[in-house]
Image (cartoon, rainbow, N blue to C red; front, side, top):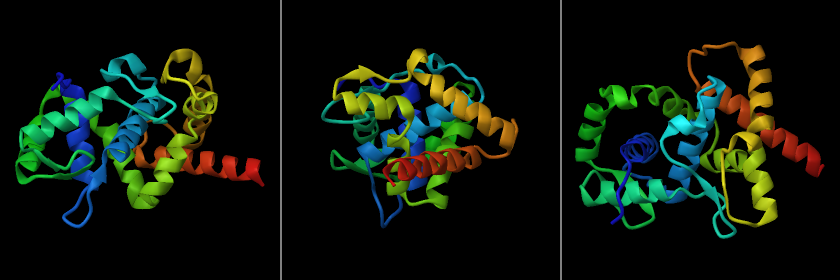
Length: 199
């Protein structure tokens, strides 16, 4: 098993704890979608992507892909913090306890509002809708059309996202009480824009 970064391990564990239930597991792709959305929400605060701690790719076979998140899922499963069959994951009791301890560490504390905002979006819209909205993020959508492998979240490709978040900030203000609000408003905007283009 390759090394899992602490940041990716925390993010994956946090997302699994918020989305999975006894009745519902979460897929590796869904975990990556929510973590990617959380990283994007950091841009709302002008937080540099480079501070997130690991990267994301778009490949012809997988529109959104993070080796670090997949390594983290393996690590969490091996440690008994999650129950995983390789794709679907659920939080284990040990994982719930570990997440409480990790959440108190200053290393991870500044990530929590963005992760809460991203996972909170699933309470306002179905997970499939969150996935669809994230797939419309301008850089991700552009790279997917090219059908090539490329690293995501490079500054040159984020111009549109910064502009969209700038408009959102004027409407919602900053700081926001909960990052779920800009997440849901932004995803809804992308989905409406896409529906309008198709219509």
